Image 1 (cartoon, helix red, strand yellow):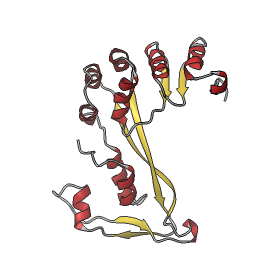
Image 2 (image 1 turned 90 degrees about the vertical axis):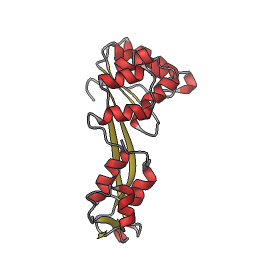
Image 3 (image 1 turned 45 degrees about the vertical axis):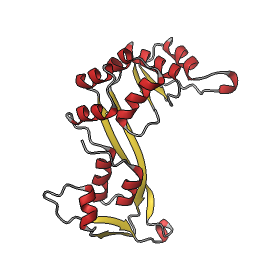
Image 4 (image 1 turned 180 degrees about the vertical axis):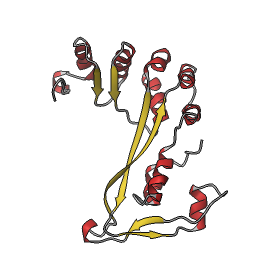
Length: 210
């Protein structure tokens, strides 16, 4: 790709993320993409790059978007550095997609609906599943669908980060500007007929109400 420089890590010659990041900073890049933040040194250099005007993208393994902020603090990034440098966190989980060739609708029980939806105003809705066919090798699924949640970092959240507040408080603050959980997004995709309620149950946490 024109204008893009890529560097591959190689532990055998001690060419790791921190060393590469330091070299990249000398090239004055506009955007930096880090494959994965695994240690304190990589996290700190990425934060410093963001603080000096670079747009930094990176991945991090956590259970939710808000927990990524807490995880960076636990790794060793100082609160006063993380709070002004982070813009947002997007979390993703992958679930199985219902096979479009054998998809069928069904009415879930009221008990199932009460588990996932508020009782007030609850009406009958249709869920979907795959019967199994040659196109999906009898599994009822073909391909994958992503569940997402996005935490946009506001000034209120920056203050919470500076104060070392837990992920639950960050989620409540994020909800004020549109945050919805992985499970919320998964339920929307169940109603759209993209996946099953079992896939949502397996791939998202029930601690989603804000």
